[in-house]
Image (tube, rainbow, N blue to C red; front, side):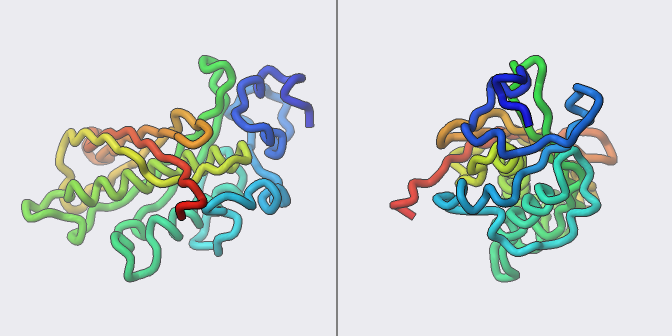
Length: 232
């Protein structure tokens, strides 16, 4: 594989180990035809100090139906991380809510208008059930915040996997705007996109859309940070 110096597409890579992900051969230079993968052998060496290693988790669910241009391996790691830390076991807070989320697409691209800086996007859907409602019969704001927190984290995990850096962090701040209510039975599409990944701080944005009406239920910005291992 050619080095970053030989390709302007990799000029703004954020990680020294960026070459460890591979792009499937393609006759087109368009990022829409790229498939982003990672070298499985790179995890044991480069992630030994990561507080959470997606590659060490057991497989949860079936990622084969998830669309997008990242590899099946990356998709499975995203699903594993979401279920392991978003849903947890049956006694964890929000377990049934997180388990109801279905991921439809996980993709990455190199933005020409961003000097080649990569971004990742995940698309998920969830049906609002009775257990998610408040007393007024609408999706509870706390439940929506839980969904956003977990779903909006996934593009950062995806980008971290592709760039061979730790994209799993703890939430530092979340700014949510609630635009419209969502009654029982609503199908919500949650579109999350990475914004930036620094040494310890990373951020993403999210829109929650009611598929039946097309209305925006909520929009949000999420900041996450890498914890200090000595304090864990």
